[in-house]
Image (cartoon, rainbow, N blue to C red; front, side, top):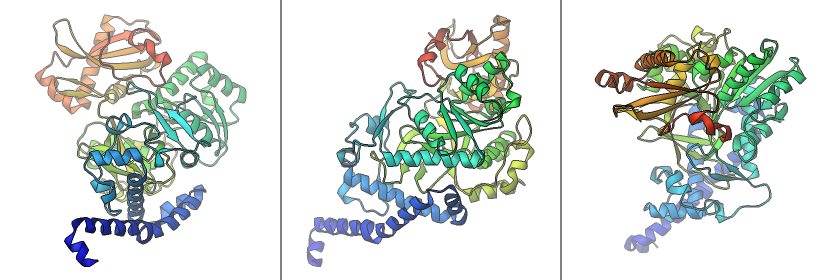
Length: 541
C-alpha cells in the first residue's frame, strides 16, 4: 500500500481523506460528542451554564469553540448540497478537506454569493427538512429585499433559551412581566422573544402598539415589575406618548430590552430617564437572533469609552465611532474578523437545518478577550470587577444596575459597512446623527425619527441632508433649521474624523442641510408599513 501511495498522488488524497474522516469521527469527534452531551445538559440550567463560564479557563472555551466550528464546517462541506457546490466553484474540493484547519481554507458566505444563488432546501443538510417542528422566518427587508430563513425545533429552542438566560443575567431572577412590542408575524424577533421570555415570567405579546401597551400597563398597575421589548426608537416613542397623555412613569419599575438595530448611549440616556435599565441584544436573521448581548459590564465599558477617548482607542482602535459592546458564548458562535474589519460568524452547533459557515453580514467591528479588556482597563486605573461603580457608567438617575461580570469574550460592532453616506470622501454614519440629536434636550421631546441622505444643492454641490420627522413643528422655521444645521456641523466636526478633515477642504459641501416634516410626511410616509425605520436613503425625492 505504501508503494501505491507513493506512486499515485490520487492514492495519497484517498488515504488522507480516510485519515481526516477518522480524525473527525474517532480521533477528534469521539471526544467532542461526549462534550456536546455535557454542554447540552449544562445549557438547560442558567446556574449550571454560568458556572461553566466562570470556572472554565477562557482559552479552553475558545479552543473548544473553534474545534466545534471546524467540525460544523466539515460536516456542511460533506452534507449540504449548496455548500458543496459553492466550495467547488471556489476551487475548494469538499472531499479534500481535512477536519483540522478547515476554516482557514473556506471562503466567506453572504447573501450575494450564497443565499441569492441557492434555493432554501439546497442550503439544508441533506437537501431536505423534517416538516414537523420546522418554521420559516422572514427578515425585515432593511437591505431592500425580505429573505426567508428556515429553522428547526432544536435550533429555535436554543435561541429561546439564550434569550431567557440573558434576561435572567441582565434583569435578575425576580418576577417579571414582559410586554413584547417587537413586530409579530413571520419575523424572527417577535415570536422568539415571546417564547423565550415565557421561560422567565409572564408574557403579553402586543406588537408595536402604543395604545395597547399603555392600556396594559394601566390595567396591571405598578405592582408588577415590567420588561418592555422592542426596537430602540419605538421605546422612545412610547415614552413620549406616555408623557403626552400624563402616564405616571415614575410609579412603575420598567426595564427595556431592545434589538434589531443599533442604539447610541445618548438614546439610552433618554430611555433611562424612565426605565430602570435598558439592554440590547445582537443578532442577524441571516444567522440567528441572540448571537450576543449587552451585559452590565459591556454597557459600563461602552459608557466609560464614551467619556474617555483614550480608553476607547485602546480597546476599539482609532475609529472615532463608539461601537456597541456585547458578550457572546464562544462555544456556539465562532467569530472571526476579516481584513476589512467585518465580523464573520460560524454557528458551531450541529442542530441547524441550514448551516451558516463563515457567514458575513458585513457588520464592522471586532472581538476581544475578557482578559485583554481587564488588562487594558487596569492600565487606566479601572477594575473590571467594580466598573459598574465608576462615575462614567452612571445613568441620568444615578448608578445603573450592576452584577459581577461573567468572563465571556466581547464583541464590538460599529454597524453595517454600507449603512452610511459619503460626501467629498467623508463617511457620515447614522450613529453620528443619532448621537447629536439625542443630546439636544429641546429637540428630543418633539423628535420622532430622522433620515440621512446626500443630494446636490442649487449650485450642484453634493451636501449631506438630515431630514427630521417631528411630532410638533411649533416654532420651526428657516432660522431654526439653519441653527440646527450649524449644531450638526459643529457636532460632526467634533465626532467624525473624516468629516473634520473634509470640512477644512470643502466647507460649503460639508455644511448639512436640515429639512423638517410632520409625522408620516415626505420621506417618512412609508415608515408606517415598515418593521424598522430607515436611517439612510439614497434620495430625498
